[in-house]
Image (cartoon, helix red, strand yellow):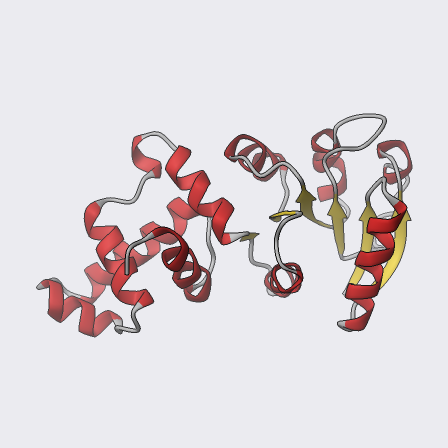
Length: 197
């Protein structure tokens, strides 16, 4: 994928460039400030990797404009539900903390290439826990997620819980929606980090 970097630390940009290019991606532009990033031409990059702590103004303020030109993937030291929720609301397609493993960045890019959202599983879990009422998984949703993470099929889960396969699928879909996740592997990873299996 063609990627633009918006990060004020040159050494971090250099490290990202090495990782991305070693993985077959191409860095087509680098910006060290919000003012520079605003000059990104439409169509140049498929993904913008955006730091939120920029010297001239918060990266959050850039998301709406950048999201019209490319898919925005936030890579930030801010690892709290408030920043994650706001970035996604403004149009970001993914969110990673700078503490995430390098493989998580590549996973995120793969998800964006499939036109899916990606939130680092640890952050997705924190986001779900911070949501009032409906944002939390119901006991039945948690049970379905727990069984999925243990390798049970929807049919086996339905038999085990005495529900229809369609109902089991509905619980899975609701859990994905509430957690801001897109796929079964992301759901399994979230379960491993957040549920007693």
